[in-house]
Image 1 (cartoon, rainbow, N blue to C red):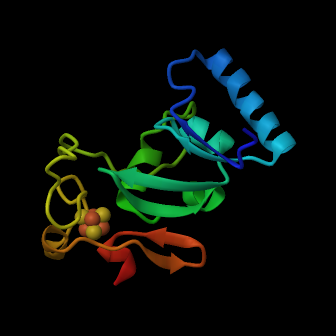
Image 2 (tube, protein in one colour; image 1 turned 135 degrees about the horizontal axis):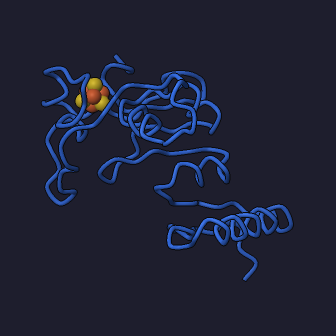
Length: 152
Ligand code: SF4
């Protein structure tokens, strides 16, 4: 088929860690050999960090942040991204980290909340978040976010 783009939906999520590492290495080797682009979908941030160049963070079916890998992990803009990064287990408990802990459950994607879809769980929400949905906008060079606090 000789594709230029491969969409991989959770390709390593059901594998144990050692097999995961082998599959990720194979994907990276194939990418280098055939100059492939991957659209790699995963909920595992360690895997995402290992394989990605650019990352789009999604919440309830919408992209809430988009940027280069290093930028996302160093300076996240969206509260949901902050919460995700803060939830990653790290071996050293003295390492400083973001303090956002999400409360409540993820709302139904079939009937998402009005306004910002994240407002029911966002610790920074303001009145406007309940009424108006934020649009994904460029906040810094090559760094996009959908959050009223970042784009106003
Ligand atoms: S728009 Fe409001 S509710 Fe949504 S992420 Fe930003 S601050 Fe939170």
